Length: 334
Image 1: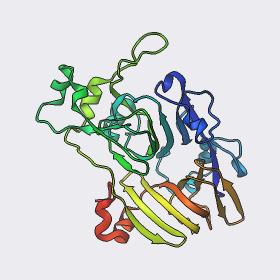
Image 2 (image 1 turned 45 degrees about the vertical axis):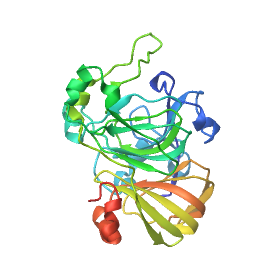
Image 3 (image 1 turned 90 degrees about the horizontal axis):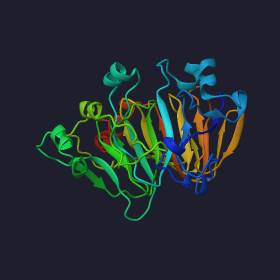
Image 4 (image 1 turned 45 degrees about the horizontal axis):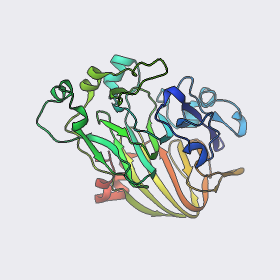
């Protein structure tokens, strides 16, 4: 299979009332309106499927390509399609939410659970994110009943380039003025604790899921931004940030031509213009566009002098061996 340039689907309007206009203004996305919160770069979610823009599947959805050759595309027979890649623009703070693990989500929602990670693309001065809860001996349900939930949030001030790992059970909220690259399990299982009193066009607040959120929250989960570990390679270097049982997230620091050899499919999103190629073809990628490299693709490479965000399925044992003691700097690896 050839490398596939992806056309995103968008979530906007009432579905993302916190969204802004930077996906269009800064990233050149063909967004349907000014207030757009999410660009789903690689998605197989029903009714939110990304479209392939080139090659034999041009004009067809990712689902169409998966039905034609699932293993050739993904490198695995594990279904459903496991990953979802987004770019998010938060003009206002998102709802405070938490995601379930696979077992709880399967029983209660018939879905995969949701673990995710954010790579910060931009952050306005003073912008912040809610990242977990402050340490306390008080039961979380009592804090919620007493109306003190906002006081329990742990706020941090992100900078561009930082990575935050958000495993299931971690309470979080993206703050206004922050844009992120998000890799996650392919799931929309989300439980809202709080939505800052926002109301929809009907004048009613958006639905909260307090009991489910309490069920799955891990209050003792206190995390910090991910340090990462860098490995020199042909054509530059790779900085690994996350490699848990769900996905791997890295930054490719490209300086020339970097071969791209993965056991599984991989997604690449360049921060600037670059060239990608494979046996029999090549194409240009615009900044913050996304290409999917099928597992069966041969001779893939990226060429330029720029950082490239990259996500794939995990190869944990191989990475542990490659990093040695530095594996402790990669979230989910130990």
